[in-house]
Length: 229
Image 1 (cartoon, one colour):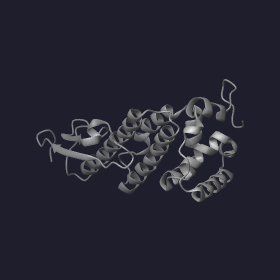
Image 2 (cartoon, helix red, strand yellow; image 1 turned 120 degrees about the vertical axis):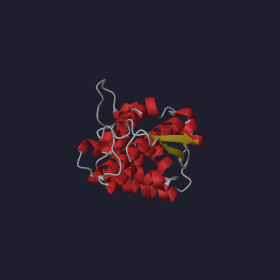
Image 3 (cartoon, rainbow, N blue to C red; image 1 turned 45 degrees about the vertical axis):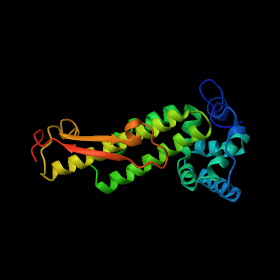
Image 4 (tube, helix red, strand yellow; image 1 turned 30 degrees about the horizontal axis):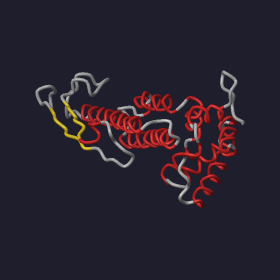
């Protein structure tokens, strides 16, 4: 085993095998071995380019570890979207392997307000939400593929991210309308508070059962007596 040591002296990859990936034999096999090989090559190249030596060391160690290699192949050989997310988020993968997917997802959700500021340009908000979605997807997918989370946690986590992403988008749009003089928000620092806007999540979103390819169905209502328009 190699990789940065944790405070208790165990390695990152030992933590991976004990806490995230208890039975590597249950991992899905790559449906496209050539894609898996290409993914491993891109992973190694990204590790070599990393400005953080610890992240590069972790990435090479994960690929050299038997269980870690099987986990990478399960992604690279089956999902082009997740493969791209994996290669561009090696630092996040390291966090998932060291701190666990629960802590990684909690950090992503709690950091959305900072990552997606309501007063940013719309293009910046859209880009930040896309990046956050990629980070959420790889966190949930690794926990799912590794068998660390039951189905209810997987769908609940995807729903939790969608809910927070909607909040961020609504805050941006409300503040944008306030700044343009279209409406007067009671509290521009918290655009959604007492805004008169009500968004109801329907279907799988409302039930907390979103899957990886779900769209979201919304009903949007506005109380015109709450805010001057």
